[in-house]
Amino acid sequence: MEIIEGDITTLAVDAIVNAANSALAGGGGVDGAIHRAAGPELALASRALAPCKTGNAVITPGFRLRARYVIHTVGPVWRGGGNNEEALLRSAYERSFALAIKQGDVSSIAFPAISTGIYGFPKTRAAEIAIGVMREHESQLERIIACVFDAETEALYRTALS
Ligand code: AR6
Image (cartoon, rainbow, N blue to C red; front, side, top):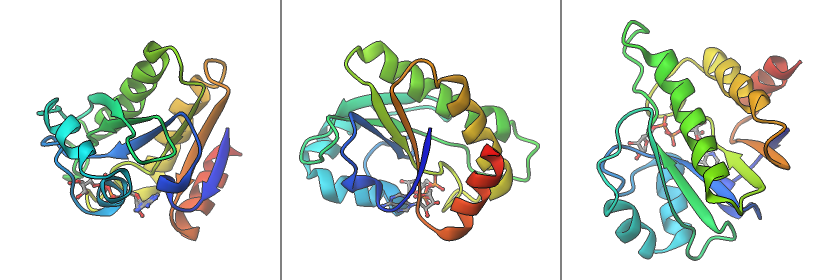
């Protein structure tokens, strides 16, 4: 397991995970960055698989990205914590791993900090959930990367890992 600070769209891994929304048509944040870097083919491919329920995931090619695949998952919008948000966030990570493993030719994967931007999930708890699910899959893939975009999230991930 590795923690890398930077832009997930630049990583040379087999699959990157996108923090998408149910319509799978692109959006802001990491979703917007991934769609811009992959090119317009990505939205055509992902929209064809919509809607994607919260906590679920779908897979498409990576088109112009260095990554061969994009796994689009929909994390929960934070609504105070009483709406199953923690289980849904865990499920987003788990379903993404399941798709990567099922694909058969994915040995490296990178995740952004799902739900912690526009969707407002508390960052400390999200880091614990993310690191927890990544640890559970350590034996199944060669490289698992947590790609963080700011120093605060990086520090929270390093604490959760230790
Ligand atoms: N590389 C890695 N991480 C990034 C990048 C990047 N290029 N850009 C942003 N982040 P967010 P969400 C981080 O808001 O909370 C979209 O509109 C960002 O700093 O992208 O799951 C979708 O279409 C934060 O730590 O995703 C949905 O509607 C993390 O990625 C909605 O936002 C997630 O922030 C999803 O919201």
